[in-house]
Amino acid sequence: MTVTPAGPPPREPMSRRAAVGFTVLAGALLLTAVMAGSSWARSSSGGLPLAWCRWQVGDVRLPPLVGARFFTSWQVDGVALAFLAPFAAGYAYAVSRVRARHPTRPWPAARSLSFAAGLLVVVLATCSSVGVYDMTLFSVHMVQHLLLIMVAPPLLVAGRPLTLALHATRNPWHTRIKHAARSRVVSAVTAPPVAYGLYAVTIVGTHLTHLMDTVMQHAWLGQAEHLLYLVAGCLFFVLVFGDEPIRWRLAVPGRLLLLVLSMAIDTFVGVVLLQGTTPIVMTPHPGWGSSALLDTRTGGGIMWVVGDLIMAVTMVLVFRAWVRRPEHARRQSHSWLEQSRNAELVARTGYRKEGVGVDLDDDEAALASYNAWLAGLAAQERRPS
View (cartoon, rainbow, N blue to C red):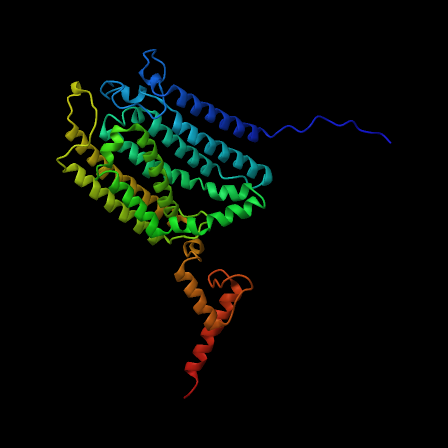
């Protein structure tokens, strides 16, 4: 008997090695940021500053944000990047797992691009000039808020990371993820009144109270604010782009209603700031020629106009996606109206397809039963009394 020598051990998949490498890099970046603190931001070496909690208030006197400086001012937000890197690595690894398990049905590239775009928006909000000047100008701080709660969350949700996790895993993790997505806690925080309430409280509470003054003076609190905006935005937009396997799935009118209500909150906060007489506490350079009150009102105008514009575009996209879907998909069999319709048809015709609810528009046997019921009604009307 010929013994075949054992070959070299199988190499670890490239996707798994990449995920581990991203995670290690994120941990190293976070550790370096913690050890360096804000001293790198004050260095005059001309290198890219690394900030543990972004630019510290009062540490530097930033030049006016005009011209090319809007595109050339950058910093490395170690906390934000360390938080985002594991998500990016995990998503990429899950996509490779789905591609390996279902080579004929790979994960749609549009979803991957959407998730990557959401992560990129967060990077721009924390590391570009928006992050550099967010403790100096309230108007820039408002732009950062819109990016974190209205732009990044819908892109991340459209990437459907929860659905991807289900496709990429097997039991017991597949079952655990499914149960977690439909658990009481997740169902409670994603309930439409709760998700909208959190969105409204976040917008109003962080802009029309003294909390914003505190955030503008304590950079570490700004990091918690970033996370709050991302979480509130994701919980809100998971209902607007609701294709994830959670308990709540709104019909299109319900999704549009949520967007209309959110526009009302954005308009209210924007108008109050625009007409306010008390400025948000900021630290602009005295030679800029702009007052804190003027900048506060500018931030209110940005919230009102740009925030409503973003929500209006989102409404158009939701409605357009709904119209482009096939008719049977627009009926949304999970909605209470369609379920009530099917239940009534079952009671009238007596037909029920095994294991599947009645759909007279697509099922030939169900349509035949419905027509037979109508013929019976017609025969009864023709029968002499």
